[in-house]
Length: 377
Ligand SMILES: Nc1ncnc2c1ncn2[C@@H]1O[C@H](COP(=O)(O)OP(=O)(O)OP(=O)(O)O)[C@@H](O)[C@H]1O
Image (cartoon, rainbow, N blue to C red; front, side, top):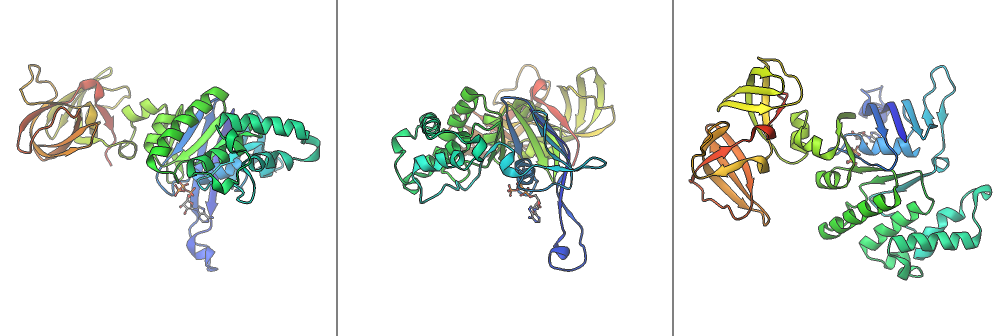
């Protein structure tokens, strides 16, 4: 549905911006390739400054990329040119809906007028009749559960309602693609969670294709059909939320999405998907999809909630490490224990019915199918 190829967007370096000679350019987006299918909720996830917003603004037509190509349903929105004539469709001709972090609703207008406005300013040839506009606006207000507020001034809505209004205004033009830039980040935690579910429901019911920008991993994991993790202008991993969570391809991804334990070692042997890794704390057996040759220095990673914590020595001692509880933290729906194993500190997340005092001798079991191999560094 959306195809982005070799997208590059740079900004002049600091010196050049201050009027000096050209400093090193900042590559906000550095050769990004993405393909989004019809009906997907596709998320760009990454830390501040990784280029998510610049990618989204390039799709929207609010930034002019240096090079690359952007197509929606085979329609070229941007093409840098080369031998052919460059194409750069104006933002208002791209037929895209956009919702930003700041709701950007029109304060002096009623809820109804806010939603009707994008239809009223369409070019004359595409404009709907007054009755059709009325009908379309009411339908969108209904979906966003705002119908009862239609005549109210937009600023007299709560934060969550204002954000729903911003969504209604983006949806009313029935966009081919909906671009969402951190639309929930201004809301408090509770509202954010409820709107997250609402967005998911809406996206599924209406079958809208959306690109969602966020630095919030929970939002990304819970909402997305696919996630592109970005770092320094590049996509470093792309996949389904569960795949990325369970098989991060780098320490950066493992640490950015949730927390992980890392144990240094080198690959002792490999037989198909079965590995034996010699680590600082003894041998670990694991199953891993990608091929890593024997001898490679590597980190074994495991999520805190994938580890089993036992006070009795398990019968099967494969992948069992012995340690002592250092610290515990009650998190409401879970308890974290930091367990000292040799020189390592291993974080284990358990259900709240397991709560062990500091100093307790424990065994940590690392299930072979929950261990992943990630490059060092
Ligand atoms: N107009 C600009 N002029 C110069 N540099 C810019 C400009 N806009 C963005 N950048 C730089 O490009 C890089 C990517 O910025 P971008 O806003 O795309 O990141 P982001 O991942 O969306 O971050 P955030 O989550 O903080 O919004 C950053 O280093 C940023 O400082």
